[in-house]
Image (tube, rainbow over all chains, first blue to last red; front, side, top):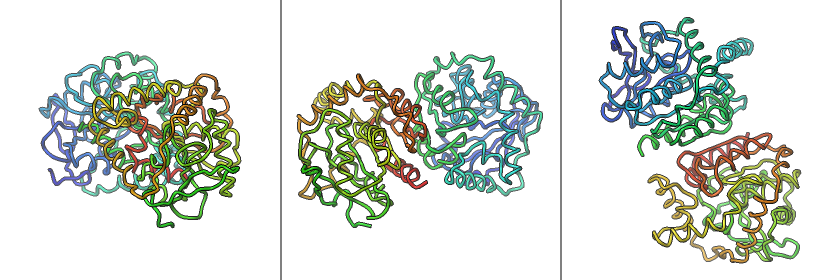
Length: 282
Length: 282
């Protein structure tokens, strides 16, 4: 067991075909690693320390910035095929053969493509707050982000209060707690903010995911998948996103959290960690 | 706060139009009561003490045997309208105006009918492991019970291992723990077993619920409802039962537990109790 936590793990770098990729490790050094793939606009510091440290109680957890994100070099590609290829190249660079993947939102799409195009590299998948190809939501993400930023400015709140949580008192309290946890890391090597160029490429990939991509390949995913979200994801609606994903995948388990949105795994971090560890263990 | 627990609360009796109804109370004496309505074949001792005591930490919890069930007198009716009328008559007999209802399985159908036909008596609803009118499952319940009893006899297990839980190790372990909790009550006044006549009437009502009843009235239910189940209910399938119920109800919150079946609220009793209390509190 590494003594590092989400708040203290140093940011490391590995060369992926001559481009440095930034990553962090938490948890025991042995066992099938669990690689975390993050959402649009996010770098390493946007991972909830409660989720990372909770999972790292049993698992070797690896957080990564893909190409062009945070402190990683290169230019973020505008297709999920390229992001999936970068993910596999990162595994190669670390000498990791087979891993478990936890993909959140945009990272959940990357994970879906890795599972379809590189099935031998994935043992189990957790897909959180995400959607199959063709589902409504991803193509409107840029507009949704703009709307939340405007609302946040007007109300003196963080955009994630609106993007990830419900209006109820208990969900907004959970938002405050979540945002507080994101500030736990106070070391000098906080990650770099994501550039507008990177966000633009991610939004282009999301538009193509909704408008020009088929979910048919999910029927061939043989791995067990835990599909999870809040019951009222207003970014990528739960019913057409998460529930549909669980229908399309041959071996899916489903977890839905009440009075919760796109950030359901952060609002219910204790429950999610327990369910995720159970799923990965069994 | 009453000192009684699910294991120690005395079985009381109240006359409902001259028929004695058996019930138990746990938890504080004040506040909107939470009335628990149970599943086909069940009497008071089939309620999970972990769920009852967990809810009673904050709520006045009342468990009831409807007409003809357990130690209650009379003959169980074969329609849900009559069971709903009995529920309201029981509330009248206890002098309870407005209550919250937790209906599980068959009890969840009774709760749906109470909410539609006596909306002024219900503040909030929790519908667990249940299904809207017309959904597949309820009409086959008799055959499903028979199949589980046969399998249980062959394998030396309890039928609920198959009816309420998944085949996975962790779900079967949860089944053992659940069945152990049902034996916690060791007082002399354990409830009477349910008669075959009662089960026959309940099965007839379930058949009519699936074959001759419309779910359209759910659109008029104004109360907030927490709809909850395991992700793979093999008795009354989650997708056409629980997920459909959440779609049909205008103000539904949804909780789904992974690697769990019809008995999801018992397998995940701690999570369920927390979510139920949050829902009733907010």
